[in-house]
Image (cartoon, rainbow, N blue to C red; front, side, top):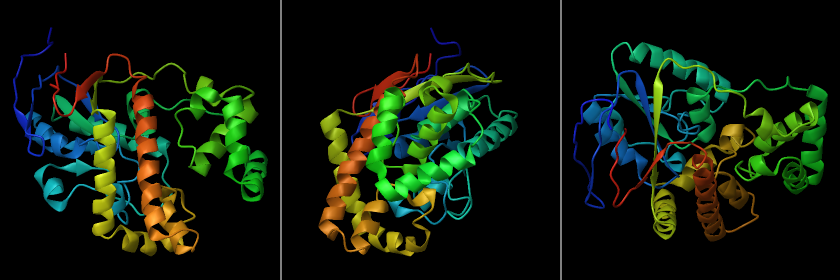
Length: 318
């Protein structure tokens, strides 16, 4: 039974001619609209935000950076003007930024916005960022600089495969959801496993921190074949829109964590002469599909989340 007055809202997805219905929720509620890359979150989020009178708080760990546009599917200028957005293109790739910093900044922003809004909308697909806002970051062991340097030396000497195999052995649960192509994520998880003597995933399951608002999770999905078709088509559009040029401009920053991202790292290999452009495009499509699959696995842990089919489903928050 809805805990607030039922408001039936029609939000039409023009591409699919789909009608979604949404019920507004109780005061001080954060609605988290998440979904895998390419599922269609942006267009729906604009219409939903306009209807409930909320700005959009982005929880995308790459749309943060102003230098990245095409490769991270940043909302268009028109979409950004249609609804106020936060955490979109507001810092440089050269600026260090952590999920802990995002937690602090996002909570401060929510506290400010909840003074004016009873319901706020957060949109994105970065699971760690969602967890940070909704549950809080777990207390992790302090960085052991000697151990980190040892792992980084192994990374340079042995490559990622060796570290991935060790992480899979020490923490198969985290290995199943982490971006195993991201060396810093793998190194950090191994660092914690080896420092604490127990799996990283176990430490990450500490009790949630108290929040002054309630949370409603909505996961936007599509049939797997349809999702993969959309991903492939979107990669083709990115190439047409100038992703290779954007990636080339980022070559001086390829060592930064922000650039260890699907779409850029494959093109860096092409620029290095390792693979052709067509091979790079195929790898971007494949790795994006794999990333979407990991996202769906991550979203499966949110108890009580409403899973909505983007083509036929109805969005409601009870």
